[in-house]
Length: 66
Image 1 (cartoon, rainbow, N blue to C red):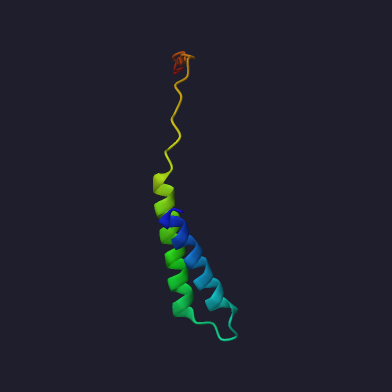
Image 2: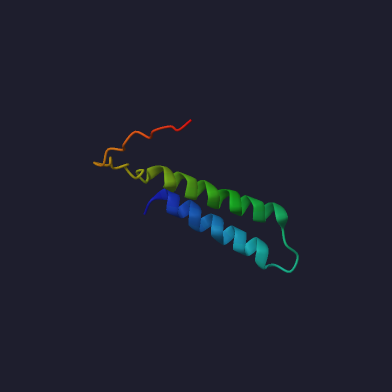
């Protein structure tokens, strides 16, 4: 399992735990969300970007009217 998935899972568990209590612990909630976002960001970096396919249709020049 990739370590990014562990960050996402751990951050989600911490954030849910901090939010589930009657008196919410804001610091723990923010820490859990930060860990979650760190894992998502690192996972996103490993996904290759979509390549732009060049079009075979040439555009015609536009005549400018004065």
